[in-house]
Image 1 (cartoon, chains in turn brown, orange):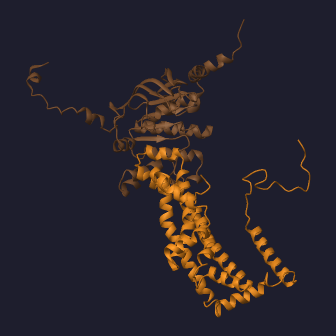
Image 2: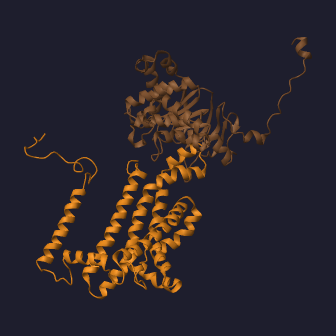
Image 3: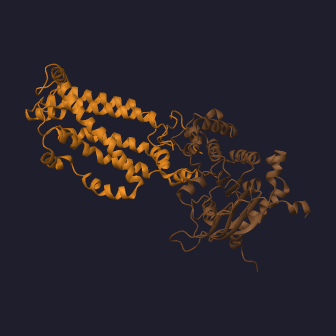
Length: 301
Length: 275
C-alpha cells in the first residue's frame, strides 16, 4: 500500500443493517436465491416431498429443474415466493431469510418476483390488456405509467393487436404470452416458471422457448423454471438439476450452453438435432428413467 | 370400414360431437308455445272442458281488457301490477344489497360462514307460508311484512349462490394473484368477485323467480291490491278467467325480467361457460 493511500482519511461506511432490518428487507433487485437444507413434508404425509435441498442460484442464470412427477419441483419453486411454506431449512433471497416476512413484506417481495403457470392462470373475466395491467394496478402504479408499460410488454410478446380480446378468445400459446407479459409487468428481479409450456403444443412450445430466451437476453434476469421435457430443459437452461421423487432430492447437475448457442445462431432446430444435444438428452433421460427401466429389465443368467 | 349408406343426414352437433344438447332451441320453444295455445283453443272451442274449469282464450282476453279499463277487485290491472311489482322489486333490490355481500363474506371468511350458515340453512327449506303467520304476528299486516316475506324467500338462494361462486374460484387463480403481490382485499376484489359473477347472476335469476312464486303467499293476508290478491280474490268467486289472466300476467312479468337479466348477463359476464 502506498503512503498516500495510507494517510488518506477512511471513507465513512454506512452502518450495517441490524439483524431485524436485514431479515425484513424485501428488496430482491439483485436476486440471488439460496436454499439451505430445505425440506417440505405435507400434512398427513409420512414421506417428505423435499429433503435436504442445498442450492445457490446466481444472478442472470436460467436455472432449470427436471424430474418425474412427485419429485417436489413445484414445491421447491413455490418456496421462493412463499406460496409454499418449507418444513425445514431456509430460503434466502439476496442473503435475506424470507421466513420471518409478515404479510406486507411478502406482498412487497412478490411484487418483485414474476411467475408463470402451467395453466396460465389468467383472469378469464378480464381482457388481455387488463390481465397484463393487473400487477401494476395492485401495486398502485399511476395510470399513465401503467399504459406505457402494458403497451411495451404486449409489443414484446407480440400481442399488441389483441389487447381488447378476452382470454377465451386466444389460443393456448397466446394465453401463455399474456402470462409472460403479466409476469414481467412489474419489472421483476426474477421470473419463476412452473411448467410454463406443459399445456402447449410442440410448435408453440418452440416459439415460446425462443421468446423466453430473447427476453432473457434483453433483461438478464434470473429465470427459474421447472419442466417435464428434457429437450426444453437442455435448450433453455444454463444450469439444470435432476430431482428424484419421494423424497425430492437433487441427484445430478448439468451445465448446458445450448441457450447461448441459440442466441448466437438463432437456429433452434439445428441445435436440438446436434449430436452433443442428443447425447446430453439421452444421458438425462437415462438418469430420470434409469431406475424404472432397470426395474423392468429381465434378469440375465 | 362400413360404407356410408345413401340418404343419411350428416351427424348433427351434440350427437357424436359437441356438447350434448348443443344448438339453437328457440324455434322449438316457439312451436311448443303455439301448440299449447292451439290446444287451449281446441279444448275450449270443442267444449271438452267446462268454462268454469278452463275458460276460452277469448274470455280471458275479454277479462284482460275489462281489467285494464274498468278494473277488477276495486283496482285496475295496472294498479294491481304496480303494487305487486313494487313489492317484488323492493324485496329483490333489498336482497341484492344484502344477500350477495353476505354470500361473498361467507365464502371468504370462516367466521361469517359459521355465523350465517345455521340460520340460512335452517329457514331455507321452509315454505314461506309456514313462517307467514309469525311475520304477521311480529310485524302486522302493512306493506312491510309482505315485502319481508318475499325478501326472506329470495335471500337464501341468492346468498348461497354468491357463496358457491366465491368457493368455485380455483386455488391456482388465487395463487396467481398472490404471486403478483396482491393483498387479501385486492384478491377478493379483482379475482374472486369477478370469478364468482356467473354464479351470482344465476342466484339473481333464481331469486327473482322465487320472489314471484312467494308473491301470492305475501298477498294472501290483508292485501287490497296486487296480482296475487287479484288471483286469490277471483278464486273465491270461482272466476277462473281472472285467475288465468292473473297467472298469465305474473308469468309474463317474471319471464320478461328473466330475459332482461339474461341479456345483462350476456354483456356483463361474456366469459361465462368459457373458462
